[in-house]
Amino acid sequence: YFLSQKLSWNLTNTFPHHTFYWKGIDQSKVLAHFPPGDTYESALKMKDIVKTVSNNKDKGRTHDQMLLFGHGDGGGGPTPDMLERLNRVSGIRGLPKIKRSTPNQFFSAIEKSGTMLCEWWGELYFELHRGTYTSHSKLKELNRRCEFLMREIEFLSAHDPNDTISRETIEEMWKIVLFNQFHDILPGSSIQKVFDDAMVDYKRFLELWRVQYDKYCVEGQDNCVINPYNWSRKEVVSIEEKSTLVSVPALYAGPPTIATTKDKCSVVELKDGIRISNNQIWADFTHRGELRSLVHKARECIASGTHANKYVIFDDIPLYWDAWDVMEYHREARQEFSPQSLQVLEEGPLRSQLLIIVPLGSHGDLKVFVSLEAESPFLAFKCQVDWKAAHKFLKVEFPLSISATDAVYEIQCGYVKRPTHTNTSWDTAKFEVSGHHWAHLSEPDFGVGLISKSKYGYSALHNQLTLSLLRSTKAPDQTADIGEHTIEYA
Image (cartoon, rainbow, N blue to C red; front, side):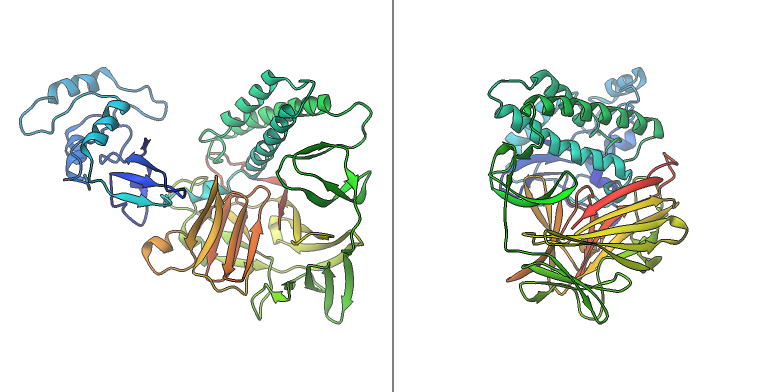
C-alpha cells in the first residue's frame, strides 16, 4: 500500500485522484490513497471532516476515505480534546460516518469494494521542494559514496572464503547510511547541528569500511581493485601516482592485471584552440576553454553555433521554504560565466587532461579538470570551487545536437521519461527534476548522456541538458554549501 498527502501541495496542477492503483515501470501496481482532507495533522474539526468527503475525487468508485489526525511532524500525536471531539461527532445524523481504524483495515476495505478504481501509470511528480535535489551538496556526495561502498563491502563479504569481514559491522554501516537518508537530513533541509552530526556519522562509516577492506586484502599486497559488477572492465587507474591501464574481470577483487591497448590519447594544438582525442571521441576547446565541439562516431554532439559545459548562476529566492524549494522564475535571472584560461596538464598516451579556470566573480573561482582516457567513451569533468554565494544556484548546461520530445533519467531499478517541452501545465511544472546517476537525450540512432557522480538535480528544455551543481540557501541552515566542493560529472 502507498499513502501520502504530499501531492496536495502541488503548486501548479491538481492531482485527479485520491484513491487509485499506481502502476510502476515493471507493470506491477500498488493500491494508493491520498487523504482528501489534504492534511496529515487534522485537529478533527468539522471543516476537515466535511472536506474529506466533499473533496473526494473518486466518488462512486469508493466510499472509504482516511482522515489523519493529531499533531504531526513529531508533535506528539492526538490530544485528549481531539479524541473527545471524535467521540462526539461519531454517529451524528447528517455528518459522514466516522470510525477509528488502522491502515491495514482501511486498505483491506478498499481492496474489497474498490473494483472500479482508476490506474495512474508512471511517475507521481511532486510540484514543490525541487531544491532538495541539490541542497547540501557534501551530504549528498557522502551518501552516494557510502551507497557504492556498501555494495563493495557486501560483495567482498560474499566472496570472502575466510569470513574475515564482520557482519555486525556491515549492519552498523547500513544503519548509518539509512539513518542519514531520513528527512530532513539527506534532502538538505535541516538545521546546521543535524548536518554536523551527519558528518560525524559518515566519518565513522568510512573508518569502519577501511578496517573491513584492509581485513580482506591479502597481507603485503600493494594494490587491490574491486569490480562488483557483472561485466569486465578495462580502465585507467592511478598506481603510485602513475596512470596505468588495468583489466579487471567481472565480480572480482584482488590485484589488477596490467593491460595494453592500441587506443592512445593525444592533445593537438589547433589554429584556434586545443583538441583532445582517443580512438572513440574528440573534443575541441577554444584557447580560453570553451567546449565548442564533441564528436563521437563521426557525429557532432553539441548544437551548432554554441558551446557546451557552460557554467551559469541563477538568482535563487523561492516563495516559501528556502532549502526546500526552487521556483520556475529562477531561470529568468541568468548569468553565464565564461572560462578565462586553458592549460594542458597531461598529453597521453593513457590520459589527456586540461585545466580550465572559470572566474565566478564574488562567488569564487572554478577550477575545471577535463580528462579523456584510453578505452573511454566519455569526457570527464572534475570541478573544484570555494563557494561563497548567497541565494544563488550554480548549474552547467549542455546544448546538444539532439531533437527529442523526452529526456530519460535514471531512477531506482530503472528509468523514467520526462518531457523536454512545455506543451501543457504538467510538462511546464517539470522544470527541475531528480535523477540518480544520469540523464539522456536521444534520437533513434544516436544519443548523448550526462553522468553525475553525486548530483541529483537535472533539467531538460528542448535540446539542452542541465545539471544542477550548488545552491546557497540561508534557512534553516545559514551555512549551507558555503565552502570548498569537488564536483564530478561526464
